[in-house]
Image 1 (cartoon, one colour):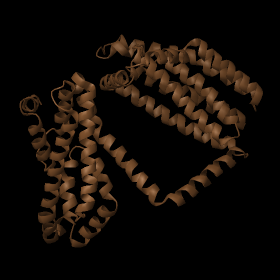
Image 2 (cartoon, helix red, strand yellow):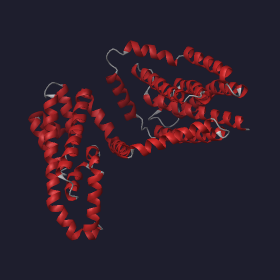
Image 3 (cartoon, rainbow, N blue to C red):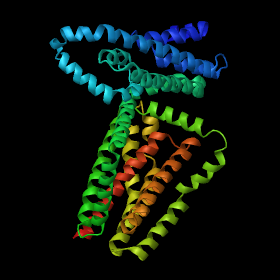
Image 4 (cartoon, one colour):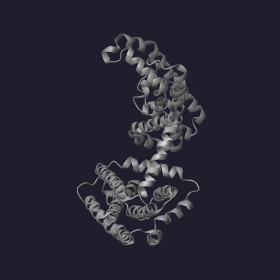
Length: 425
């Protein structure tokens, strides 16, 4: 990596253009490293941001176009002659070409972010006879998004660009798959908008009728049990990651992004947001929960009982968790003992439990569907803002907060499940 950055230091834009051109024709060049370092040089004032993006885009598009014509001239005849040996004869090639022309071209935008895939998309587009105008439309757009993203992030992160690159490399494939899935989902929605909207309305109406029918309890029990089971699986996964010391990159990148995004003019705002996680705020939410039970509760005795269990029991629950993890930190495993003792976050557990139980009761007893949506979004906003404020002021590390939310979600889910069973019997 040092050798290629040295060339960028000496020759700047020329190396950027040639390196990305070569990478697009499948010659192994670390394009993301190169562009991130270019962004760092922009941060230092040695290169121009806009011109760097133009040069990087030019090199990428020339390379992709070269690969496209090579695939078109050499690939298709070869597959027509020998493709049957790999079950890709003329008939299968025609079907593949038709599918790629209809659906796959949208994925050209995302393929740049998936290592190993971006190197073959130009060739494959040519081999499958994708019309050049269609290829250019999506491949050149993707090139602009890809180059702009990495150069801009390198510019934003400055001297810490290497931290970003090392951490994000592991998630490029996952991120690319997620983005590809979103693009496919958007395409399907646009193509089948009316049937999907009618189906969605039917599902919403069905859920509304279920919530007003006698089978409401069974429905809620099943949904709560499923959600709690998923939270338990996530909890086990987090414990495994904790033992494998896999939270370091997550903590570094999350802390860095929060500090960069909220570094100007946000201090006073987030100091106020810190109040949402204080004992006083949680006590107010508990009082509001009790008032809601008195006003709207259908089974006040059990709802008050669960309120006591999620709060008082939650205190015991987090103490037990801390005793277990603190004992682990004192054991033979020392590589992660410095933050195991604080995992999961006490405050995050109680914030999730208390705000979550209040949200559940409001949603459970409210008739209007918009109230359900509003309360769910409000809960997500509170959890996110509390997490960001604690990270911003260095009060807790991101993995401990995430752990607190997950462990709190398990405790809340188990108590809600118990409440719904009480209702049912």
